[in-house]
Length: 425
Ligand code: HEM
Image 1 (tube, rainbow, N blue to C red):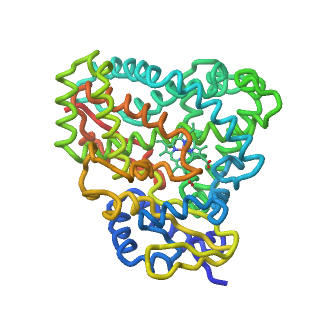
Image 2 (cartoon, protein in one colour):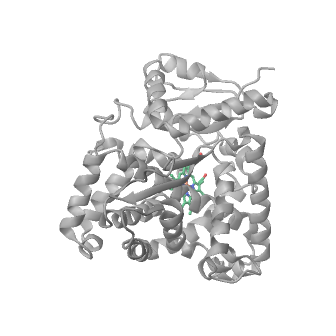
Image 3 (tube, rainbow, N blue to C red):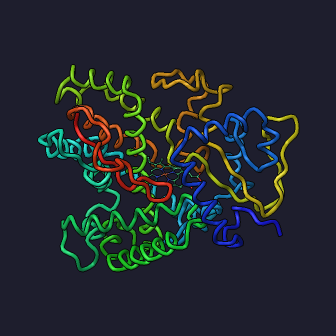
C-alpha cells in the first residue's frame, strides 16, 4: 500500500508529526504557498500528476463538481460529528442547509449595525490604553466583537449556550471558556486528522464538552429556533464551531497582513482621520473601501489556502495542460485556492495589493477565500461585514503595531494564531 499524508493513521508517528509540522508552517507562510502555486500553475501537468488543481480555471472546474470531488474529505477533521461542510448532497444536507439559511437570514437584518455597535463599545474600552500597554487583538477584541455580532445565530439562547446549562448567564469567564472550546474544535478543520495525537486529544475533549453543552441547552435552542422536528444537536454543534473561530482567525490574519503594509495602513488611517467619528460609521464610500481592503487582505492571507476533496469514483479533471489528469477512485484532491487567487491569467496584476482592482468577468474569483460553487461559504457576506466593522474600529484607535519587548507578539497553535499582541504607537 502506498502511504501518503492523506492517510495519516498509516504513517509512523514521527513522519506524521513532520507532515503536520510542514502543513502548519506552510499555513503561516502564505508567501511560500504562493511560490509553490506559481510552479503548479506553470506546469499544470505536474499539478495534475500530484492530484492538485492550481490554475483558476482548474480550481473553479473542480469545485463545481461536488459529485465527483466530494466534501467528505472534511469528515475526518470534524471532531464534534458530522455537519454540512463534510456532507455529500442529499436529503440531510438539504434540510440542514435550509436551517442554516434561516439562521443567516436573521443576520441579514442585524448586520452591519450590530457589528458596528459591538466595535464601538470595544473601541471605547481600548481607547484609554497608553502606548506602554499591549493587548491581545484576538482575545481582547475580535473574539468578543464576532461573538456579539453573531448573537442572532442562536438568538435568545445565545447566553445560555455560552454559559452552559447551569452556568451563570453573562459570565465573561464562562463565555471565554465556550469560545476557546469551539476554537479547538474548529482548528481541526485544518488537517486535524493528521495533527499530533496531543492536539487531536484536546480537540476530542473539547468536542465532547461542546456536545454535552448543546445537549444540556437543547430546549433553549429549540425554542429560539422554533424548530421542533429538526436535528437540533447536529446543527447547533456545527453552527457553533464553524461560525465564530474561523471569522476571528480571518480577522487576525487580515490585520497581520495590514500591519505588514505600512503605506496601505497609513492611507486608510488618513481617510478615517479625515472622516472622524461618527463619520467613519456613516460614510458608505469609506465602508465600501474598507470592505474591499478586507477582501484583498484575505486574498493574501486566506485561512483556507488549500481545500481537500475525496474522489469516490475514478474520474479526470482539466488542469489546463494538454491532457486531463486522472484521479483514481478512493483518492484525494488538493485544491490550491491560493494559487487560483493569484493566477495572472484570471486576475489583473495579481501580485499587486490592489483593493480597488476591477475584477471584470472574474468577479466570482474574488471570493475564492470562501470556496467556490455550490459549496461556497453561505455566510461569506456576513463574515466580511463583521470584519469590515472590526477594521474600521481599529482605524479610529491610535495606530497599532505588533507589541515589542514581551517575547513574540504572535503565538501559534498548530496552523492558527492563538495570540496576537498589539500596542498603540
Ligand atoms: C471569514 C470567515 C469565514 C471564512 C474564511 C470561511 C471559509 C469557508 C470556506 C473556504 C468554505 C468552503 C469549504 C469547502 O468548500 O470545502 C466554507 C464553507 C462553509 N462555511 Fe464558512 N467561512 C467563514 C465564516 C463562516 C460563518 C460565519 C459561518 C456560519 C455562520 C460559516 C459556515 C459555513 C458552512 C456551513 C460551510 C459549508 C457549506 C457547504 O458545504 O454547503 N462560515 N467556509
